[in-house]
Amino acid sequence: MHNEREHAVKVLNSLIETTLDSANGYREAAENASEGQLRTMFAERAARRMELTRQLQQEVRSFGGEPEDDQSLLGKAHNKFVDLKNAILGGRDDTAVIDEVERGEDFIKGKFEAALDDGDLPMEARQVVTRACEQIRLEHDEVSAMKRARH
Image 1 (cartoon, rainbow, N blue to C red):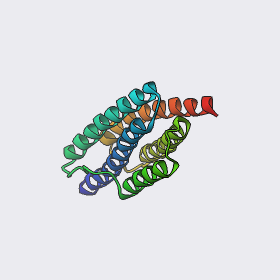
Image 2 (image 1 turned 60 degrees about the vertical axis):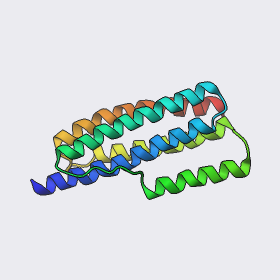
Image 3 (image 1 turned 120 degrees about the vertical axis):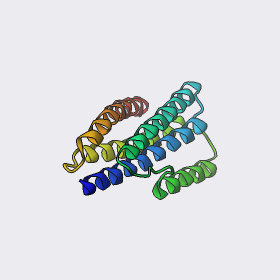
């Protein structure tokens, strides 16, 4: 039982880092988008991802673990790369912003789907991950549709 709890904490903490990466990515997208409607949508999604982070953190606590509270090193590096790219290109290209958001959505969707495929994930954690994955899939599909409409 102890190993099951540790495994759940490890998987959930990995999802927390990715969700924090996503929230910060959406915040960056909101700052870099020029269209007001996109800025609003991205800011709302950043807030939803922070709420999802809080839910995952609570689940980690329910397993007796210490939840992550910072994004991954890879996510931080990616955010810095996007900042640098925007500074070099010197403009706000909403299509490019949407393309970056969709790349992030592909990544987070894959992480949550992999967690659902984890046969060792306890049922309690699986329920939280399933609900989160449904939301992420929906938002992923919306961003993908936006991207297709612009290309």
